[in-house]
Length: 604
Ligand code: F6R
Image 1: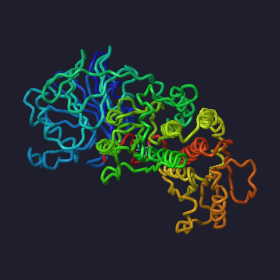
Image 2 (image 1 turned 120 degrees about the vertical axis):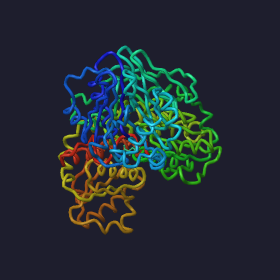
Image 3 (image 1 turned 45 degrees about the horizontal axis):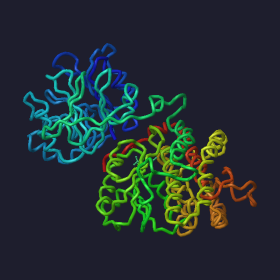
Image 4 (image 1 turned 135 degrees about the horizontal axis):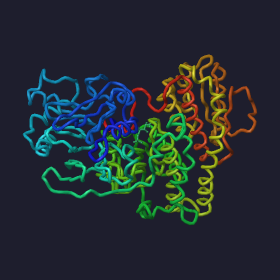
């Protein structure tokens, strides 16, 4: 949440900041601003409520500054306004912030700031505290300041009498940095400066960075120097651009076949899953009493698919927990429990805290994470990286399918290690998994048909997604996707549960997206569909049937390729993603930047 970028070097900073903010906009897009050294000892600000494009419009065309900071905001304290936009400047200090300073009220009193602040933000309080503590030594002021702050923060700070220098420090909220030919960069994530460097390091917590055009120095709060540990990614700037697609979401839906192949193929040896390269040997899967999967949102929905697979195939007790609940409950985890946390960003604060809690009870913690070196990846005892590449659209698509694919691999491994799956069955399972990218390609080719057949969704007020078993997990994901980008009210229901109350909401023309791909409950779901149809629902059916025996049960059928039950989740979810996408676009919304949301939820 909130995107931040800083640069000092030998090329003009303004375009670096604006282009970087454009790429970070998925982290927040209600206001944006930059600060830079205009001349010796003078910091200039440009900021505005609105998007990065609005900021660009008020920037100076002839800005030759080579040092500055920029921010795109997701409002926490204080509404969306010009004055609340970052950077905030107090005296000689100008700063940008991602996170929340929880004790800002106390600090207002302690530093007698009442009546002196211009904005309603906790960030301006932090700037005022640094200014009050500043006597010409930026590092000293920052060290003293951060010791007073409670909460999470990633700060980039300029001091007017230190031109050419950017200072940064963080607690919890993520930041990465790099020094390269053009100068020194820092940002919330690598997408902001990937066009300059694919090497970067994670800024360690409570380490103070001093960035100059010549390099970056880093020291702990006690003044001990630390060396950056550089990482490298194998994607480039094109992965963070739309490349001709109308939206990032559409691009990312289309990238799913390759993302799945990248995630599964390197982990197959002789046709079977092998996690040796990930540092996970078979002993990790031995002697496992139960599994808890912890995550938020779409990642949690991927966990629900994982649960259905693991529990039904091997009768191991599996619980799926919402991270924000789990972290405040007394966990039922023993030494033999496996805890799998799932996160695209690797920075979701609730998931991270849930993982820290789980680490106290078991050594078997495994993170399924997309972002290399992220906080969750570092905190977990074991990591399986998904290889979706950067996911820019706020609504998660490709990250979900690679998480699900990872659960399929884990299922086979667990089955083999525990002797609950024969090698023959395991090979057949993996063969089907390897077919998935091509199956998704077939669905991608039918996008126009899906758009046409589901046009009705655009005008819907209320919708329902129903299914049983694995399809119920998918229904939850389909409903979330539709809600978050098209703002159409959607509810997911276990098909058999509808008649215990919710069926009262079904009336003439209400769309019910029905998924019927699990053979053992197929006839049951069909009966449930009949029940809603009889009450006037407009039924969109996702099923493998070549010819539905009673066509009157649905208004539209979207055909799923013929695959074994479990594997139908992949083509089905792609259809659900398209339904949401086309509904949002049909209503004139930008699916990449849904209202009130931001990618990477680093506040509670
Ligand atoms: C929905 C969506 C969110 C995320 C959730 C967890 O489309 O993207 O629900 O799945 O915020 O984020 P990560 O996976 O980064 O932990």
